[in-house]
Amino acid sequence: MLLLSLISSIGYSQNVNLEKINDGLFTDSLNSKIKIYLDCDDCNASFFRRNLVYSDFVRDTKLADIHVFVTEQRTAANGTEYGFNFIGQNQYSDIQYKLKTVSPQDETDLLKWGRLLKIVDAGLLPYLSRTPDFSGVRIEHDAANIPKMVFDDPWDFWVFRLDFGTNFSGEKSKKEYSLNTSLRADRITDVYKFKSELAYDLDKEIYNDDDEVFTSVKRESEFNARLIYSLNSRWSVGVFGKLYSSTYLNLNKAFNLGPAIEYNIFPWDRSDSKVFTVSYIVRPNYYSYNQETLFAQMEEWRTTEALKLSLLLRQPWGAIENTIEGSHFFHDFSKNRLSLESETSVRVLKGLFFFMEVETDLSHDQLYLPAGDITREAVLLQQNKLATNFEMSGKLGVRYTFGSNFNNIVNQRL
Image (cartoon, rainbow, N blue to C red; front, side, top):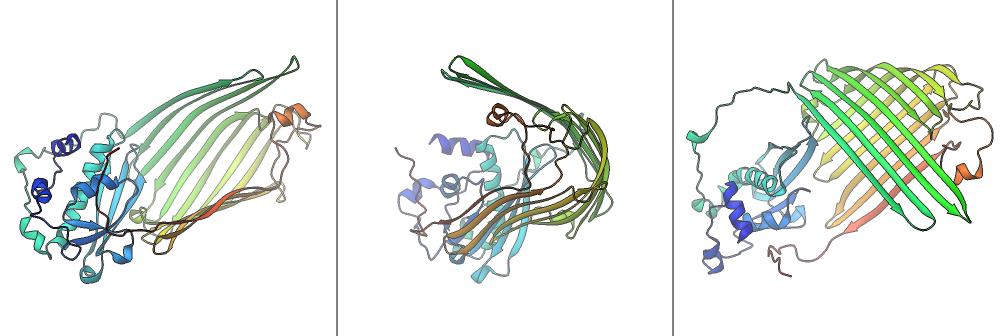
């Protein structure tokens, strides 16, 4: 009852008398109700089933009359834009369209679910109009309470975020402590995009072994910024810059600044469902090292170029997000790197999903490696990056769900 009263206070309640349903005046007939496959990660299943009482929820899109496929993408103000794709099937196959809504970053789950429910309600009306249930639908519109849209942004599109965190743990022979802090400042419009971040990380570990103390301290600090200008619906240009230091990478300080250009095969207004970009960037780099490197350098200027392909597809059958990037130093083409990141989830058949996550680096560009032998203590404490030409991590699996396709009952009892 508390949940129902909160929902009604938001103003997204459905025009159906639940007491009449419990009294049997409304029947849960699989033949009379429209069948929905709600493909939405942020849509709370219990909340939607409790409120969309004029529909049946199914677990397989092939059994649905309407496939509601929901996409998500982050907004400049750190909110979330939801794109609702209503895909009619069977007798509703001629009705397909899209609605959007934006949830602010400070919106609670209950308010967000109410917002998404309102969009689903509106989107299902054309389908519902073809059923006998449409006679019981009432649409209310209070024009007197609609505020006038006056655009006045005192922050001029600027969004700031401050993060600060620390954690520690300890036992008789081991103590760990870390400090992580960052400040972000972003300004994003339709034409310009500026993003920047200042971050500092400290990790300290202390080990006791037979009255001998080993200490590992790793520090990283970084400031990066980028300015992107949209030339048209597909082309963009920009400038990238970065200033950083890392004891783990033997960098006292490092700096780079360079131009970039990007082309999206699809127009950017379709970015919630598909993006396929080709980007190219040139970076002059300055490095100052804590220790002399394997190449007998304490500081140097080196220029790199990189080409990156990115593919993002969000479709009813699943999602694919792949990025491949190749780069090299101009002074020595053998100093190069090839990186691949891939995330794929595909609906194979009823209830069965295949998923794969892979990150791979073929690296031959470790100019920062210190000369001389690294002590066993430093290796065990992971104080320095070790020489390698290959790094890989991955996850591969299947997910299968089976059972009743027409169970709409909500039961939250203990």
